[in-house]
Amino acid sequence: MWIVGIDEDCDGSDTKLTACTDPSVAITVYPNPLEDQLRVDLRHQPASIALYDMLGRELQAGNYDGKGIVEFDCTRLQSGVYLLMVSGEGRGNCVARVVKR
Image (cartoon, rainbow, N blue to C red):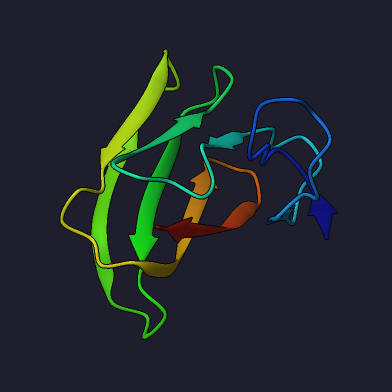
């Protein structure tokens, strides 16, 4: 399991909260904790992304081409902890724990 890419205040000093099964999968998830928007930088790697609550219910999902930053509107989410699953073609998965304030 490889740990990569969450930086809560964008200074590079935070504990990583993302686990990946493949070291070639490099993503960044920010801000965390989030207020209204969650951003995922896929670093030019096409992927499927899904956001789940802690009961395993899928809240948002989509397929992305890896171009640019993916933004999720989280304004309707309740405060709490969520899981973001990122799956790349032919690569492993990443799971990020994200917190909504």
